[in-house]
View 1 (tube, helix red, strand yellow):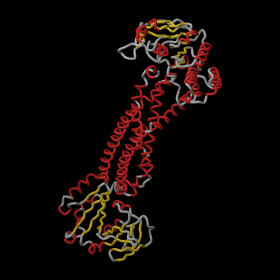
View 2 (cartoon, rainbow over the protein chains, first blue to last red):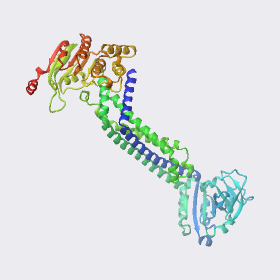
View 3 (cartoon, rainbow over the protein chains, first blue to last red):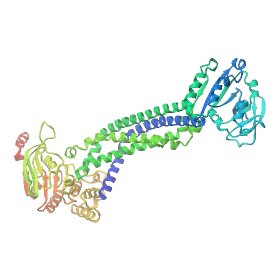
View 4 (tube, each protein chain N blue to C red):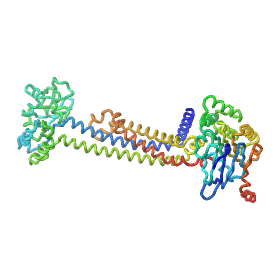
Amino acid sequence: MKLLILTFAYLWKDTWHRWFEQPGSPFAKGLIATILTFTSGLIIVSFSLQEKTLRLRLEKMGMNNIVMTKLVSFPESQNLPINYIEGYLNPLNEYGDLISFTQIPQRAKKNNATTYTVLCVPDQTKYMLKDYPFEKEAFIFVSDVIPEGQYVSLFIDDLKVQAFVCKKHESLRALGVDELLLIPDQWASHFAQSGYIKKIIFRNNEQSKLEAITHLIKNICNEPLLKNLQVISPLHLKKELDTLMSISSRWKYGLAILLSVVLAIVSGTISILEYRQNLYVYALFRSMGLSSFSLFLRHLIENLFIANIAACIALLTASFLHNLFFSTFGFSSQISKSIPYLIYFNHENSILFIAVSIGALLGGIPLLFGLFKPIGKILE
Amino acid sequence: MNTLPGHITCKDISYGYSKKSLALEHFSHEFNPGIILLKGFSGCGKSTLLRLLAGFLKPSSGTLNTPNGKPYRNLEFQRNELGFVFQQLNLLPLASLQRNLEIAGAFSGLSGKALKACIEEWLRTLGLEDFNNRMPSTLSGGQQQRAAIARALIKSPTYAFFDEPTSGLDDLNTQVIINTLRNFSDSSRFIIIASHDARLEVIADEIIDFNIRLPLEGHLASLV
């Protein structure tokens, strides 16, 4: 034990001495590991956030909902009946419920200038949203933020309305909008003359037939008047998610291999440069009977220490700069702000620690050859 | 090849630092316990022989055995039975004199009071008790030489090898070293000294003269 403590203490002192004498070597090892881990960490986290965004969309949408969106611009908005799209989609009623809305171009404004999407609600949709008091209230403000049961004042253009606040209905989550104003369908003819967006949620009652339904919708979309009907189905999202996960996995392993290889080359090159300096002290200890393996192990620990500290610094820095980066890249604040530390130090990024460790271990190999050089050729 | 109990046996050993020339060529000898002086001119191979005997080099050819087997890469031998003083001394530069002795002693399994007592004894014997906290670089040449000897002898090795232990030392320092080696010697220890210092001949039980083995000295003499 005494030997272990004395040897460890001396070699540690020697290491510090070497680092202070030639700070370039540990600095270069650390800097390369930091830069590579930082970049790889951000890339992996960006994939992770994209994945999370998709999962959230999928969750919001629900596995049995299909959302269809169509922009109807002038002159079609005037020439065609406002519910012409629903007419084409009637065959879908056999499989589930259609909940349609007409989004008008105007947005509702609050006093504080915040604006909200405005949706006109046809009668058949009112029936689907029977939790809402449409018979009493003409305007319903859907919000999970403002307590329900109270009124809020809103403006649509110059028109002031008092809207009754209700919690978001499960079916409306598929629209992916946080807060919105529901108004009677009759208003659509007034506000939607210059164009509107038809939003239709198909609530599928037979989940097993999702593929057949998606196919049917695709066929319906071939109608000339339904050109550009955008269909977002959970299948589509699921496929997107699978593709993303496969790309993310390839990137993750690719980055890990790159990180290992580059770090191994850098650490290996520096090890060769440090070779002479280390070899003298190591030969002194070997002459007293310390095994080459122990000394090699010490060298590996040093490399591992530098590489892992550098990786920690890189990921901490990335987590500090997280919001700056990801708000710039256009991620929603809800996603990008979700506990950065945990995002950077989760199992996804543990592969980076494994990669830097492998790189550091491989980088120690050149010294291994030196440790088999006869002591008598080193010490005089 | 069998090694007689209490003998180091070299049979026809050769060694070269490069493939072109050999530093030691076809050396055979049976070493008995006692003080053995290897003398000869520079480059005659006496330091190489010491490193071979210590297991720091592996013979290119021939066989070398100690009573406990082949020394080359024998860690137990190097930890417990070998004390070696290099020509360049090679004290651990970042450790105090005391710590240098502690580390060497710990390698042979000494610890606690026994180690402390050994350190005190050797520091006293070699007149270094006032320098125990000093770093090697702050010691004089003679003090460093004595410190290296203390480090080699602290484990009371059976095999103590010295490469030029008195080179460049004054008579007083040399006398301290001579007395130390004489007192350390006993019937079971192999003290092998490689040196061209004639002052050491007085304590040698056996002198192996490399000048006789090799005719090169005559050639060197003709250059003077």
